[in-house]
Length: 198
Image 1 (tube, rainbow, N blue to C red):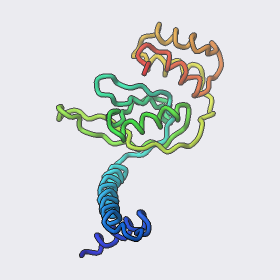
Image 2: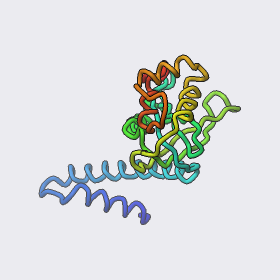
Image 3: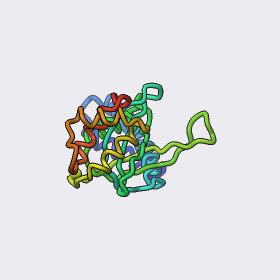
Image 4: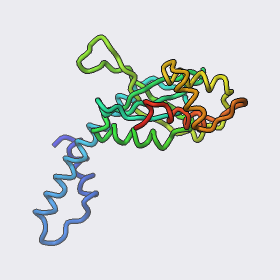
């Protein structure tokens, strides 16, 4: 028996607990099932850690999350430290990893986050890459004010140049005509753009 298999079996036995008298067959099956589960979990975790190792890291403020109907992927809007907006994609929302990332991102809107991002080749299009977020570390709510001019520029950029849609979103969010806004206020305005609905 190789050492890895022995360690995995011992870990599974510890997880299952002591064998009740007379239930050796059921206990053995429980240990075997747990060992296989631990093995496949380790394989999945290894793949996740490999993606993290390969990811580019940067700090940004998460401003919005929507789900793309065709792919079920989350589309995250982040504002990087230079004040520009970036769009990142999650794994598919019909996968466990994608669903968890979408839920986590929704809970972090308005927060400063450490983004772990990969450039991944699109399925079916070998010449195109997409920016995929593989992890977010929460640094807490972003309280730095954003000058109203810059915030309005961000909103127009998010509206793909549609100034009327940006103006309407700004007004619907109740943002001031003059003065700074918070990242949370800008996120609220972004959520009011026509394509921002989940």
